[in-house]
Amino acid sequence: MSDSALTEEERRLLVTIQDGLPIVAQPYEELALRLGMTEEGVIATLAPLLERGVIKRLGAVPNHYALGITANGMAVWDVPDDAVSDLGRRLAQRPEVTHCYQRPRRLPEWRYNLYAMVHGRSRAEVAEAVDRIAREIGLSGFPHDLIFSVRQFRKRGTRLSERRSPN
Image 1 (cartoon, rainbow, N blue to C red):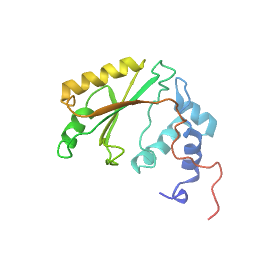
Image 2: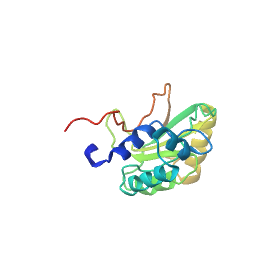
Image 3: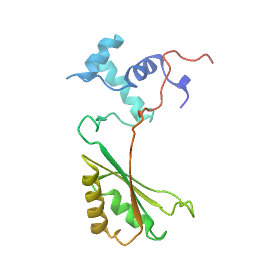
Image 4: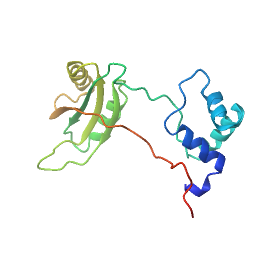
């Protein structure tokens, strides 16, 4: 969707919420006050943005570091190509797994094709979870590794500038 397909009201609302909803008891009311709208107007403006797919979802994105979840492990396995879809589906269904996907191997340096991100309060906790998951879904016999994050970069979605660019 191009920037010009947004109404001025939609654009103002998107710019206001792009860093997140206000953390207050009534965030839509707070947005309405900031934008000179009614709470109903904010909700009525958001609804078509969600329907059109301009906004994929509204939801909480907790800072897991602030919650004590500081160990982030990417478990990687080298599984046969004909088994990766089934194993990946089973792996992705695990509540401990936040991201799961297949990637091509980069032989000879990188043999792994199945990836899963697991978070925990310590590296030992993550390693135990990965070992348990591997045993329970049949990944134990495959070559694997567990790689931990050493630094987190700020995550941000697409950004709109404050002013509409001239056409």
